[in-house]
Length: 409
Figure 1 (cartoon, rainbow, N blue to C red):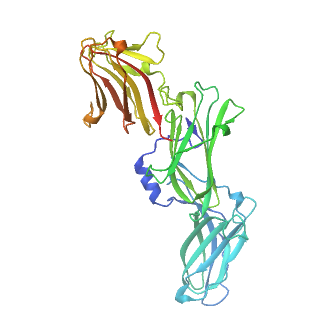
Figure 2 (figure 1 turned 30 degrees about the vertical axis):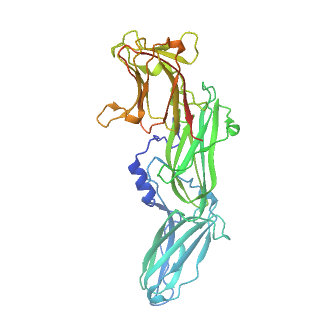
Figure 3 (figure 1 turned 180 degrees about the horizontal axis):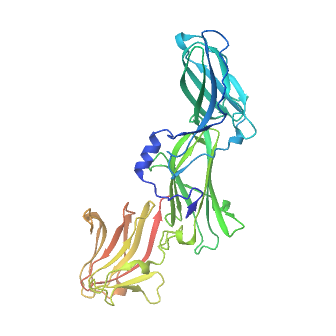
C-alpha cells in the first residue's frame, strides 16, 4: 500500500498523543519577502522602524505519518500586518494590507516607521480574500524590539490557522479486478479515543479509474480545524488505514492511498458476514500431532464441517476489527454418550490462551444416533483480542455449521 507521502499506516499511539496535544513545531523556512539589504533610516528623531517579512513554518517536526493541508500559496491574495501592545500603551499605527504576488507570496517587505522604541507585538495573517477577514489560511505573531535610530529587519513565522473550519479529502484506490470485489468501506473520525461513530461510503459512489483501479473518497468540507484520527476498514478488516489528519481553516488536507492486491487479507469478515475459507485456518487434530483426524468438509453438506476428535481441535482467529456477534451451530456426535465442550479461549497474559467460565459451552451427550440429535447454537460477542475456538478432544466427534459473524450496524 502506498500514499503520496510514502509512509507506513500503523502509527504509534504515543505519536498520536503528542500530535493531538501540541501545535505544529518546526524550523522556519526562507521568508516570503526578501530581507532588505539596505534598510531605510527612521524618519523621526528618537524613533525606530521595522522591515517585516513572513516565513512559512516547515513540516519536519510533524512526522511523515500525518496528512497535512496542501500549502497552495497561489490561493493567498494578501497579507495583513498589525502592530499592537506597544511600549507604555502608545497608540499603534494602522494595519497594513499588502497584496501577494502571482505565486501567493509576499511581494516585498512591509515597513513601519516612526515607532516608539521598545517591544511591539507583530501579528500577520495570510488571506485568501483580501476583503474577507474570515478567509485566513496562515497566521503568526511575535514580539519584536524597536531601537531608537535603527531600522530592524524581522521575519514572522506563519502557521496553518487553527480557528474556524477547513476540509479534508482522502482517496482510496484498489485494483478493479480484485477477487472477491470490495463490498464496503467504513470509516471513523475521532480525537484518538477510538469511540467515534462508524460511517460508510456509499458503494454507488465508487469510481472506476482508467488505470484499472477503483476509487472511494472520504471527505468533509466543514471540519473543525485541528488534528483527528481517521480509521478506515475496507470489508471491515480486509485492508486497513489508521492515519492522523491535520485540518487547517480555509484549506484542504488531501491524500491518496493506493492498495495493491497483496495489501488485502485473504481471511476477513465480508459484508455478508461469512468467514471465508474457514477450513484453511483450522489447526490441531490427531492428538495435537497432525494426524489424519480433525476438521473436514462434511460430504454433501455445503457450509457444514465435521470434527473427528482425538486430541482436540482449534479454530484460530486474529483480532477482528469490528463489533458484533459470532455464532455457529454445533452438534455433539460422540458415540459413547459423553458430554462435549466448546471453549472460546482468550489470551491469558502469559503467552497462552484460556477460556473464562462464561465462554465454556457444554454439549450434553446422548445415546441417539448423531443424525437424530439437535444442533446447539453457540453465540458470543466478538472479542477485542485474537481468540481461539476450542473443541474438546479425547476421541469426541462434532459437526458444526452456519458459522457467521453478525456485525453491529
